[in-house]
Image (spheres, rainbow, N blue to C red):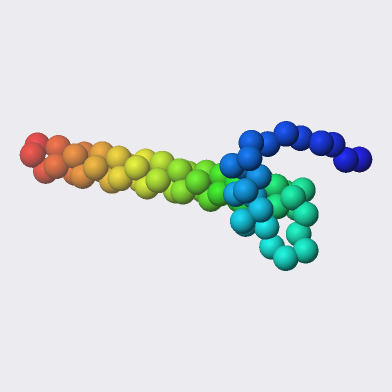
Amino acid sequence: MSRAIKVEDQVYQELDMIREKGETFSQVVGRLLEAQRLMFEVLNNVEGTLRYQEWKQKQFLKAVREQQAVRSV
């Protein structure tokens, strides 16, 4: 099923500039949406990695403090 959508002239021109030979505007929009989805997946993975590294660093610092406390006794 096809639907018509309105876009500003500037948006149309930008879509037309990135459109590959033989590609429809629907395909351009689909490609951009897929790229956005992949970008969010990457960002979520990076965020998860950073949170894990932060947790790991906190655990390490906690262990160091515990070792220092044992040594000072």
